[in-house]
Image (cartoon, rainbow over all chains, first blue to last red; front, side):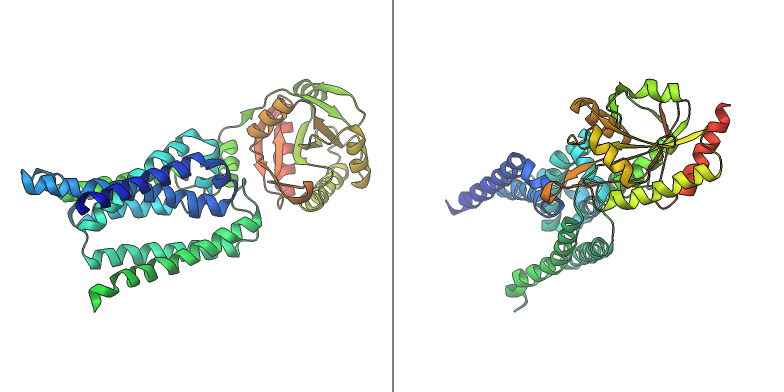
Amino acid sequence: MIRYRAPFIFGAMAVLFMVVALGAYKPLTALMSLHMLVQVPLLILAGLFAERAAEPRLTLSAYEATTSQRRSWSCNEYGVPGLLLVSLVGAAWMIPKTLDDALVDWRVAVFKYVGLPVCGWILGASVRRAPAVIKLFFLGNFCWMSAIVGMIYLDHPQRLCNAYLLSDQEWAGHGLIALALALPLGWVVAKRGALN
Amino acid sequence: MRWFLTLVLALTAGVGALYGLTDGFTALTAESARRLDVSRQPRAIHDAVAVNDQEGTFSLRSELQADGRVAIVNFFYSRCISLCLAQGFVTQRLQEAIEADGLNSSVRLISISFDPRDHGADLTRYATNMNAHPAAWQFWALEQPRQRKALLNQFGITVVRAAFGDFEHNAALHVVTPGGRLARIVDLDEPGLALQVAKNLSRGRQ
């Protein structure tokens, strides 16, 4: 009973995030800060929760029948290839041009609405396979990148995105720096139990 | 081995995405991308119905053709009190340079308004405030919304509505040939370069 409740919640959240990110795309892309720090994360989380919802069934079938399920993922050993891909895609969404292009170029829009949930799925699958050291490495890298990009946004006197206002660029900068602080803090809080 | 292959695949896909999004690692902003793109591949601009400060309507492409001079074009709106003023100052200096160098017969300046509220009278007022000499510097507005949108798209001008009926927009100097080709986009900080490019284009035509 309990086994099946968690996947249901994860599945519902995945659907909810996807519906919000798609349904409210107009207000969510009206501001640079919302576009970068709300819509993009929602799409990634949708993929991540979808993977979480599917995961118990994957392990169940692995236990029951063969190890084929596990072997099919052995190409993502320690989650390193997956985390590498997700890091690079994360970097791509910090480039101002990507945000501008997502509004006017259908190919970049597809990269956003399809690519990001897929990346979220890969992220979920990779994090489960990654030892703490590897997680720490990728998290650390992502955080300093996010903080530096945030500082560049704050520091830049001109607009970096043609579609967004300068004041909004500052919000996005502050948001990226906040993200760089919140992610490791959240990780430490989540791992607190394991350390004690 | 399989792990290594997926690692290479992930690296290729990720770096490939970055390559594609930055136009081959050359541009991080849409603004620099449009400038590079135009310098590599000049664009033939669409025709549009324009109106000038004398309230006369005309076809933009035919006017460029009939005039025969290379134009340095910028975009503005007459109620603007920030970027357009800086841009106007740069254009004033260009006007002085054109007149001082005796380039009146080969290069001219055109400021095009993207604001639907701008009509003949607004253009005249703005031209007077800018000390524009009608022979060297003309002011146009675009009449039809769809054509205005298409032209702005083609030039890569993004207009964002800001508070209090203001607009925020990207600004640069656009060198346009009499044949209606957008040949080069130059930064506002380099009016001398824009003039040089215009001069070369004009010389090439003779």
